[in-house]
Length: 252
Image (cartoon, helix red, strand yellow):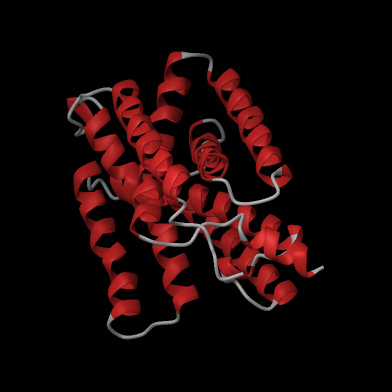
């Protein structure tokens, strides 16, 4: 049993600067990629394809015996793309207002946190020592992406702030848990998930600002080119981790 616990610990990376850089890039690319495919091919085909890719990478992540950077971050990227599509479908297809979808996904996230805490006694990513905890972890990640997408759209469109203003607001809020943890010694688990949730609307807001057309407040670079640049950055940083292994938990 101890061998299994140690093996599963290595399936989640250590959290550091590169972790947050890649996380922000995946959230931004998830937004750009989702929008590009939804608007350039049949939206239903895009969602189905995104779901199949999401399931495939999730199976790959669960089947691997230890943390492998390219597998882990590929799964995060697919969660980002499909999570974005899921949130967009609730508004575009089902007609759910941004405020309602934001509140709904927030409630879903709270329920997942509650069930995870009640079942396992901790929400720390460093305590993922079983497949059940890993399932809770990825369910939480998916919920944060859906919530972040809805919240980002709520600020940009619902509150009519625009992409750049929304991004600046989320960037300012993103600093709060970092300062809270570093200066005021906030609970590390609370600080982590606070920041993690905010990476989604933060990355997506700046992805929309750079990619969307001028008429709706963007720079007009295009969703496709923005996604391509972000993909290159992700490959570079993940390749760095794959070579250096600096984010591998060696304490177990």
